[in-house]
Image (cartoon, rainbow, N blue to C red; front, side, top):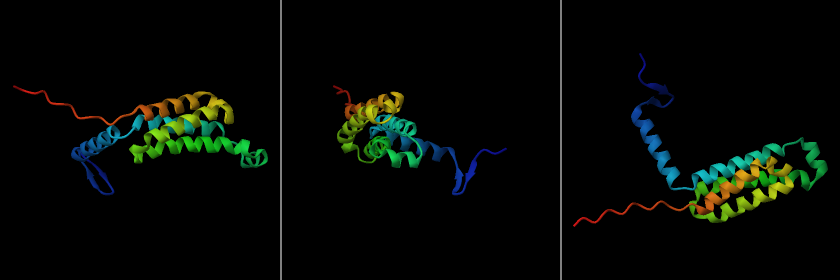
Length: 140
């Protein structure tokens, strides 16, 4: 009976899985993680609904490229604050504005779903704050 899985780097035991989960939990709590996830999901939705053939994009000009630029910009605005949490205000606002702009330039903002996810993610980034440690009760 196998109790441990093997990988290319050796055995993966319960200790490594717990350490990986602890690392991810610390990462998630020190960054605007959920705002980034929703903003990336909104950007992906806008990008998905604005996909068309390259020949059509070249013939339509900026109108065809705008969906790609807005969707890609929303994805970048969702990923950058995960690496640089201090920039959450700037990229949260830019991401929310791009989400609203997607209503005009990309099939009603990914049929409203991409725009709503983008505005939700951008506002969650702007409203996110660093978790402060709990104060200990003073005994005595």
